Image (cartoon, rainbow, N blue to C red):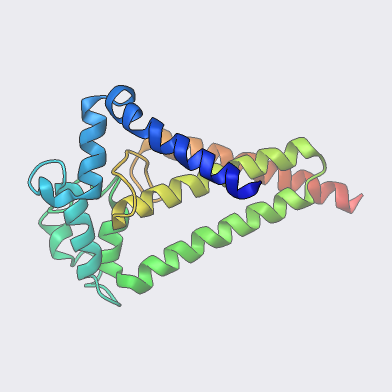
Length: 191
């Protein structure tokens, strides 16, 4: 029964995908997907960001070139390095170890948020904290995958690192909500 269901879903997807490609996507959306799959098709146009981003991360090696010493960063070959592609600049300047430290930092933040959610006083507070953790983790994963070439180029910044005022304000407000939940749960434990 399970195998039959899987085959039905796969068949439906195979039939619907070409129709969605032709009628469900705009021309620019199709172009973005094609460039995501092969950025070398337009290395000086739509594929430029992704190609320079992966070169920047790769040129950092294990330890990086040093802060403010990355050639691609210094010469501005990595476009939007202060916003969407901050992880590329970080990879070039601090190397693999620096990027791993950033990923570990985000993982620790997510772990702490889930711990706060588990200790909250109500289901509502728990869901708020889980929602904030999910929002932040989504941004982190999409941004990092975008800069290393595993996802399409989007405008999602890396939380707390990318220059983006509205995103930064929203992320700090969301963390403030989580701090409030944490504080309330600690108060209720002390009573």
